[in-house]
Amino acid sequence: MSGANPAKREMTVTKTVPEVRESIIKILPVLGGRIAQADGRSIQCDFGSLLKSRLLGEFWVSASTLPKRATIGLQDAENGGTKITVDVRDTHKYGLKLGFVKKYEKALEELADTIMTLLK
Image (cartoon, rainbow, N blue to C red):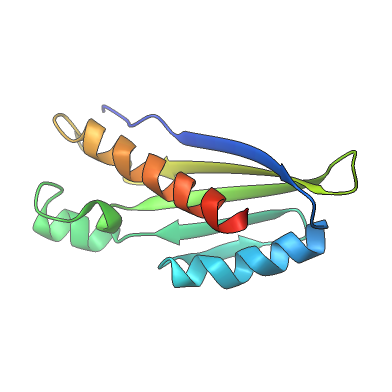
């Protein structure tokens, strides 16, 4: 199996953890995400469609349709703000991705960048 490298981002904002969490909960569905798990310090959200990717084939589906999971961590920062970490990974675990690794990695990078831009 040839997996795509995850996209990782990190930044600190001046908002408190509850304020950032509320913003994230509102933003993710707008981006097409389905929140799978959320607690006070962590949010996991699924994007894309494994079924569609498998039925139509990875070559034929758009990058936004490729199955992905974003894990967002929130920590108190020293200045009273919040440290945000975003880790976006490919969730299509079976089969070969030969020839599609770059497509996956680009999709992961774009999703991570979009999430971080909307949280600034």
